[in-house]
Image 1 (cartoon, rainbow, N blue to C red):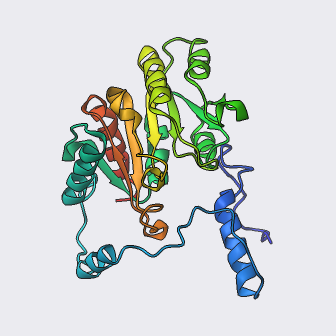
Image 2: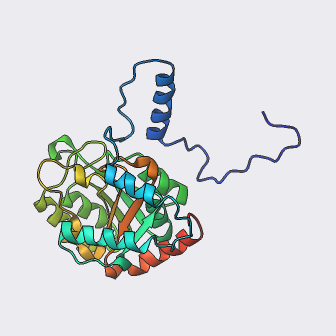
Image 3: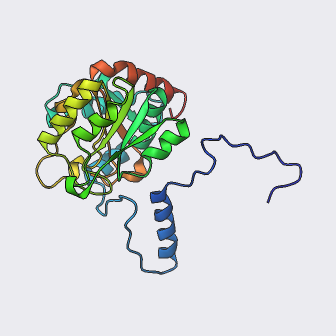
Amino acid sequence: MKRKNSPDINLNLNVRGLSQSATLYINEKSNELLKQGKTVYKFGLGQSPFPVPQSVVEELKKNAHQKNYLPSKGLTELREAVANYNCRQDKICYSTDDVLIGPGSKELMFLLQYVYYGDILIPTPSWVSYSPQAHIIGRQVHWLCTSKQNNWLFTAEELDKQCNNDYLKPRIVILNYPSNPVGVTYTKEQLKKIADVARKHKLILLSDEIYGELQHNGKHISIAKYYGEGTIISSGLSKWCGAGGWRLGTFTFPESLRWLLDAIAVMASETFT
């Protein structure tokens, strides 16, 4: 209830009308129902039913006393470990300086959209937070249509068609595979074709590979193998490690996008650090 002399309601126009993230709302609602003793089958949040690996838990316990502020790009040893992991997985040479750590990949995605001035291309269906983040910042969203015939994955032809409307307009293309919510992934041939289109139009690819370690039908392949110069690999602990509540996300950049990493690090230094 608004008091007579309380401040007037003045909200940013980009925030007015927005609702809470659908997945988080469903999770909170289902937890309330569970507390009431009701049977609930959760189909909302991507929460692993498995425990965090014990070795990871033990390391966290050992370092619970660590309390000093960290570099704005993240703990150096952790960034080095992430770079080495991507080198092993993708056979691409990354260094510590190519990695940025944040409080969940969601926060890093938001900052990326904020610092890079361009349109956002998102496949449909897709994870629920990509589009609202763009809306909050005021970015133009374009949808990449998919179909059952294409296994709910957008094609290189569809991407090229979208970009041909304005040949070299700055754009971020979000590529999420294995896909949330569908669970499908791209073949090597499909990734190569998308990489060719991305190179043609000088696109920034945000390769959301948070479910990469959970692909059990063959080995996960990153599109960074085919378009390394323009691909940012996004990952974290929330899915494969089952540690969504720990809020640890990673971005791995090519050296050619160091300017973008540095810009996000500046934002990090003024926000979550």
